[in-house]
Amino acid sequence: MKTNTLLSLALVALTAASTTAHAHAEAQSATEIVAAADRVRNPDQPFRVSLALTEYQNGEARDTVNLAVHSKVDPATQQYRNVVRYVGPPRDVGKLVLLNGTSMWFYDPASRASVRISAQQRLIGQASDGDVLTVNLAHDYAAKLLGEESIADADKLPRSAWHLELVAATPDAAYTRLETWIEKETFHPIKSKFYSDSGRLLKVAYYRKYEAQLGAVRPTETIIVDAVDAHLVTKITSSDFRPEQVQDTWFQREYLPRFSEE
Image 1: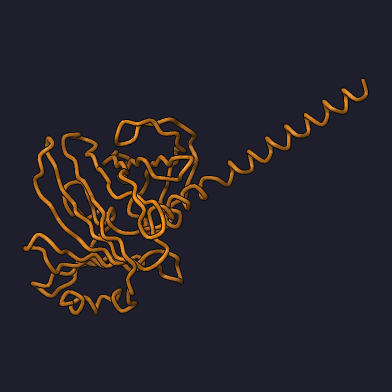
Image 2: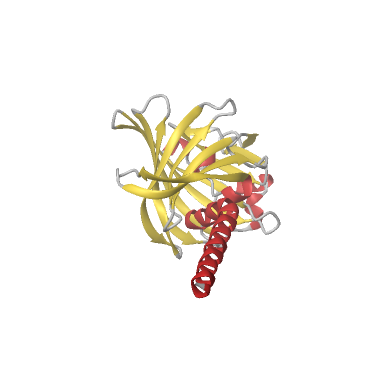
């Protein structure tokens, strides 16, 4: 009897310890999950990537914009700084978008003027400047774990995912609030919902076509669906990831006229 009692007490203790450890992990997991997903999306070195943005209506392509994004982490803030350069169509070649801290500028070589803009500024279709910039969500948002779910990815395949809510925690955040689903086994982003300041759903994004790029398996295609009209879709295709000696001078507004001529 005494042995059975001791065994029962040991099992209870083990169960309690396991439950406590699980609860402790859950309490810390929201920020950790988002940070791990950031590492999936973002190379940990200065880099360049080519983006092709295509707008579709009822499945037919209407317009395309091609960009080159040059990114580097600011050691002081741990947030990415970006220069986005238009490489097509011909009417837009040489235009630039600069993000350095909370300052975001659009430069047009035709007028040689730079104008302050927001991350919500539309590029094409439902894609905004904030959607093509390299960002650390764990830095800009306070994350809350809403639960674990099985959801369908962009290819209609079921995925076991964490469901998280992200609320803007800094002025750098492109959106006031978003929801995101991250695959449990891989920390791959699967799906996100983006909301306006008033709480209206703006768009839904799906991340797909994962490929090995710069030391990690990363999404190379983002499908953005208009929340009001599902027939309006924007596709962002990423290619030609490569390390780059990104210079700090590139992130100065005064340097933009010289950058456009390189």
